[in-house]
Image (cartoon, rainbow, N blue to C red; front, side, top):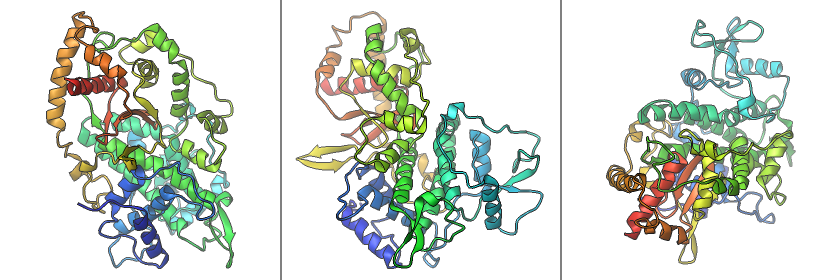
Length: 509
């Protein structure tokens, strides 16, 4: 088993990179580094400005860009060459299955450019250098219509010109920013396509394509991160480049580096937890009678503040909160600041009624605030939470689902389909055991037996003071995190809470 990574490993890797050497070592490979970066570092750590403007999360992300790039190269390849991780077929699959638009991945079919670089320069000129801004939530944005009669590798342009989908060999800084913005704002569409893909294997196939897209953007950013002489035609995003002494060559600013690292940190967290989360048993009967708890009107009313809080986290694109915290370090105190920065005319959601909460297809956003009132020992956590716990007075990082990480195959991307079929070691037995006890317990509740009699363990669980469980809200999704075991569970919040109660019931027997 590889040893745990720590700060000296990251520091040594940065030193090797500065000398032009490879960053990858036996212990510093893609799975171990990605796990350490996402769950072993604190994204909200304060920097000691007298020593460094970046903390461990930022430094780990910098190393990740180089290690990811090296993973797609042979030893003899030059590290400066940016590898091609995503291809035209991947983009076609995403645009067709997810109904998304990826800017700068299109070329003119009427006159083929001599190189992808020329094509991208033309697209930059057509775009007039406009900077991407978050003007409104994705649900209110219009999407380009698709015509089934058009060949699968082409899409119509507004002026009637046919364009062909073509992944460029390189992008400018403004194009990179546009693409990152597009992935952020359209993540709900990606998530919807993943969840509606049928079997678990099919879901992981779509997830793998999304992972390759995000990884391609990440290594493109890594090229600019370590480039000390960015060309003028590449530096079209003037906000994030500056002349650096003594040569006064163009390079990324500290603000630009943090901007991208913060967003990629959250996007890779989304991919990681989507890949490793374990689905809990699903209840298919009427929601108002099948769960060992009941939601009343006063729960809904008491959860209004939590409803508005969750609503704001759901309405901002993934990564925007963490990016805001570092852009305005020392001024952040509430998520509403980030919301109104991106959506100046933002209006809070209309509170739900009890009937809305009790319906079978009620979304988690409507139900979870009431469940928080019933079982307040499960705390809220959001996209930047560190998931550390104290062990003998020492802060220890919780690495989610470490047993499911496998050796990395550069040819298959970070989400190798051959590896996705392996389930959690104890998942089959645990699911069967839990579902049987849940069924017996829920049958008692459905038969009208008082929960205060045979259900004393539930009352005892409510009075237990524990910090091992979190509702993790990230990318408009809800997961149940057990920091003691380092496992993330997925499903509807009512099923997740029932699963939580069944585990407490088993523990207290």
